[in-house]
Length: 333
DNA sequence: AAACAACGCAACCGCAAGTAC
DNA sequence: GGTACTTGCGGTTGCGTTGTT
Image (cartoon, rainbow, N blue to C red; front, side):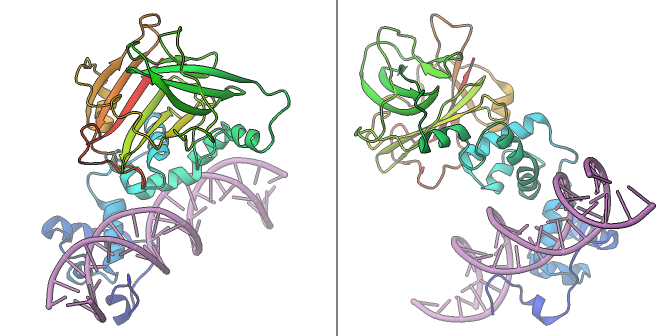
């Protein structure tokens, strides 16, 4: 017998295709009274000529009473895009963050609308990176322009190299005494630091011992950074609020522990409230930094997030002092 | 008005992982 | 440990609806 096929499917001719109202009623009545228990036995007990798999799908995607009906809100769409940037095509995990929505309808939404929307905004829906950057990588323009910028996160300095206003690479530079802070510079599409005497520069990613696996630039009103540790390899990822033309993401990986003492549980952080996002992520919100000079322009949040599962290769080290959770930091400007 | 294309949604299919025996 | 079976997930397909020519 082939794996994944129900034995009942071979024993009798079963109905396929759209469900009739009568079938819906039978299934709904049965599960309401008895629960689904073993799905393979549901159709027989409910008097349906369907396989258990079909019954389960109909219940999960349509009959379940806790489903939210109607069109997706703009907020939901943005959240899906943001979560997709972190989770990829893990529709069930994305759906877990949107109460009342099913993985199937989120998948349909993504394939029919959101992918198109991102492409129209110049963002690769697979990588969530600007499409222009790919073009640059393939054929650098003779008129291209590179810059170096600085970023301070806690006491660590990071060098960021940009090209044509896109972040090319990032590496930790050295430890400085400046208190941590990061600053977004909208005009430059860059993240820099509160300490303008020192710098976080973006460096070429092919020579540093702190290799950056993948990143691009951001120019938006909101960004996320998530962190992880795999066997000593620290990863962090900054993903902005996708969906507008100026959105971008940054994804960094290093083979050192450069963030090991930088990011943690934000023990000294000042808690700030962002009820809506807390609700989305069912998590606690922490502030981790503010600019002295542009305090009104930026707020930095750190999320302790136990809901979102990390990417493969982005597994959190449970034994780590600092990485026992997946963290998301949101920068608002 | 008809033909065609694009879209949106529901459901199916195949696979992998988990479980029971 | 091997086999049969169940469950859940993601990719894909089919079809009705809507828009365009």
